[in-house]
Image: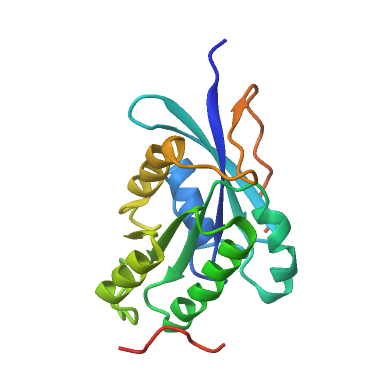
Length: 199
């Protein structure tokens, strides 16, 4: 039986940036305004064609609240990639993105595939300039996209890009890709100081 490699991808970011909605749009192509804050952890599977093979992404949705921060090292363990999500209409969430990047680098190393994702791009009242976010992401060596979990804009593009890059990515000992022998059922959902310059 032919198997395809699977990769653990963890979504991190402040609460209310839309991580759960991004995941729902990615997996189910649906959006709901009635989404409860993630209580600790949830995950879903997404199978994506990378261009020459099928890749399975195990997408971990983590809580952004401070009371769950101590659990993040365990959630990030063995992750092959991390998606740092911020809200383009919330400057504070963009400021906090650096802390999330630092956490990912500390736990997984700077060689880890990283994506900086500005969500809620469909909304008015933008507070985070796109050019500044793109430049900062380039400095960090991260992918950069702005998405809308509501309209689906760039959501599939994001996960397609991850699936394309992951098989060719150098891997550390902490980031092992494992052939997936059996489909796992997704768990049911249970529902500072700014380091970036102000422009």
